Image (cartoon, rainbow, N blue to C red; front, side, top):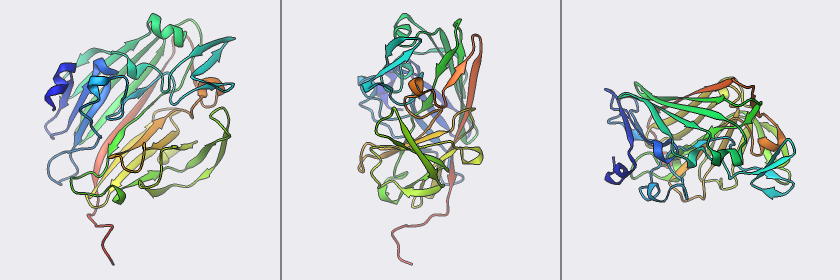
Length: 317
């Protein structure tokens, strides 16, 4: 672990398999690093993009690790006004991806291989989102994989709508000396969402599952929704490194949207993100999860690194 991270009171999880996760509870419950074994292929590998400069400027920029998104995934827009949403005749302002990643969380339980963190409503959140809520996020190392549970509870007296997700920045290439262009990301089968012409209206069309090069321009985001069953897995692979990352979100009810993004074609990462809804769900109501007073929602996610047959995509047949 980088020495500079010690200033932010990191939680370091580890187990006998050599798996390790570094979490920064005070910086938005930020999963900053994750090292997992890839079968028998040597020591555990870092699977998340890390940037040592970012914790010091948090929350101005959170472009590494895996931030948590709540109470909305993506941005919102109301009648052409960005960062605006309405409820019961009142209009509120909220930044892209909500506020959970920009707040300090409390650690409420911890052992060597797991950590549970909590976030509750504050006067500052009530101005943006007029609900009393409680979030619990548990990260746990299970052998060669990292599992996490995300719980959302409505502690208010009114129905509480939300969308949520995670924003992992997967490291590419997966080994030193590799080439970014050799890596691929799997688009799950579902329906491709296209803004028509803005996030206030979407055009949806069938989208089959398939592998795509990360060399494509992903700065505008590829958004796939209505994902079902076994397709609720996001994967990134590096044939030269002989490894593939799998993020399984099939046991997160209502989490059936995937977003593929990278800032440009040169960055050393690609984001493959599980969301519960397309952007602007707080306004559109599409795929929005609404909890009755006293009700809670819970999603389970698994992240693992699996071996592939090593091959050089640049070699000739």
